[in-house]
Amino acid sequence: MNHAVLSMDVEDWRHLDYIDRRSADATYCMLDGVERYAELLERHGVRSTFFVLGELAESLKPVLRQLVDAGHEIASHGWDHTRPLKLAPQEFAADVRRSRQTIEDVIGKAVLGYRAPCFSLDRERLELLEATGHKYDSSRIDFAAHPLYGTIDMHGFCEADDMVFNRGSFVEFQVSTVRLRGRPAPVSGGGYLRIFPWFVMRRAVEHYLKTGAMYTLYIHPFELSSKANPPFPRNTRLRDRIRCTLGRAGTGRKLEELIGLLKSRSYETTTFAELRQRMFAGEGREAA
Image 1: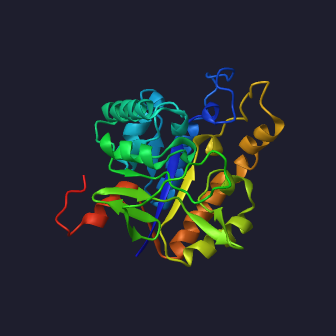
Image 2: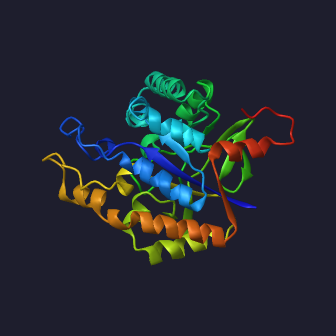
């Protein structure tokens, strides 16, 4: 059985790296996209993993608890979307501890996983994730062309499956990319799903699914929000305004098309926590 994990990085528009947070209107909220995403998932009978910023957890408490009750997984996205590679190692460890504890207090359940803001992670910080009690990470992506993404050396890890690595019970779920003309290209959602026409994304995803590897999708609340485009700070560049808003109206439709495509290729959708649990089933090892 081939597996797909759909996920949402729960952050608001002002957390985007190219937005000046000091000048952004924090009262303008686009987090209604979380509930719209959950409603879409319910229509299709799909469960998802939600990587939540710790600083948003308390304000989203009713929503997060509803997600848990519906069978979704809640994981950590760090505290306030500061890129880990901008933090000293000890600052990063404090950040992920704070986020994890806060989210656990809100949902009343253990948080197992983490995804770095902007996939900004390296091997040193990956080691700290395991040391701080996290059981898996999903921050590795093979796309060096993006200036914000980190590079994670997997030396010493076993490749348990395509795009899945483990060392003992700690697991790294790599984010999906496909090789086009010899170069890696993202097929995992976010701005790529939103901005590119569906026929382009469909061909890329179909090409990827032929490998039978685990497929991952990530998306953000602002991309599914029913709200108007945000009131950008004056110093926001035109290209950044466009990259934030282009294609928002069609994101939900594309996501439903993608779910249909996965089902037609016999991909089973699950959560990262469930997939990790299955990895160790029958081996007599504790995966929780």
